[in-house]
Amino acid sequence: MKRFLIFVLMASLSLPLFAAGSQDAPKSEAAPAGSGEWSPTRAIDLVVPYAAGGSSDLLGRAIEKIWTKYSPQPMRVVDKPGGGGVTGSVFVSNSTPDGYTLCLAYGSGCDMSMPFLQQLEYDPFKALDPLCLISIHTVMVGVPANSQFNSLADIIAWTKSTGKPATVASSTANGTVDLVLQAFAKRTGANLTIIPTDGTGQSITMLTSAQTMAGGAHPSDVLPQYKAKRIRLVGVAADERDTSMPEVPTFKEQGIDFSAYGSIKGVAVPKNMPENIKNYYESTFKKVCEDPEFVKIMTEMGQPVIYMNTPDFTRFFKQASEEYKKLIEDLGLAYYQKKS
Image 1 (tube, rainbow, N blue to C red):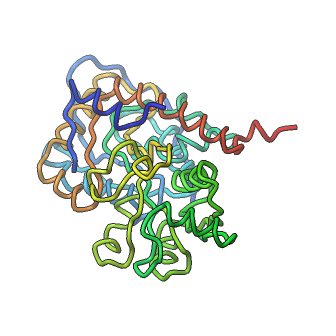
Image 2 (spheres, rainbow, N blue to C red):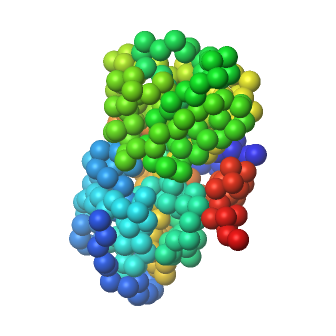
């Protein structure tokens, strides 16, 4: 399996790599074609299809803060949660492609895994166009600060020696984190009882209060608790260690042959957006990603900055989608596998 860090390293040869509800919208219409330079004349809506306070919302707020350094008009974050991200994504896909409505977190669960888990009201590849990649959030496994477990091997050994399941908190059923936990159990034979919650906040609370024996989350979700030593992190499901928390060993380093793409945080635009408008945004997001203040904010949040332009991000998105399809099929979760 080619994973995201390998792809990013290849892309970095030509691109910089920096570590660090529902509401209806007008049906999409073709915006006037343009060949000259384009610049916004009013505020831009950056739609986050998840709830306020999550990692995607935090990423949007960081972009919002830096945006006016490089654009004459402000960018405002608009949270549209619902349907595991589908509500906000559909809203953007139905918006007029005039350059004033963009989608953030393209490549997260609703675009990357849900098309294989259930039939959706939209096709992520046909409803939206990839614009650029901003960040990738890996999946980490943590335990309460007073836990007897110091590694993934400890969790596996305990379940096998006691014959009991280890309880593990997950943010959303069959979301990115949940899929990693299910794959971890299947690949290692560990007896896990995975407890999906209504969101990251609840799952982190369960973990820090030791209501569960372990939990999965993205680095930025657990960074405050990790710094306060309320939890310990025992593994990251990536090919290489996450630059935001390089002290956390990978699954592979612990003898578990598994890694995942994590939660991809890209920007997408409605179909039929004129090339000059897309070029404007691709260029401006690149400037934001290169901004030292933005890199600093992202580093402090535990989110690496990984910029990819439109062609590279498009290829990467399709590659990651294929790998998620294989993972979901391997877990027996694909909706078409369940049809009689």
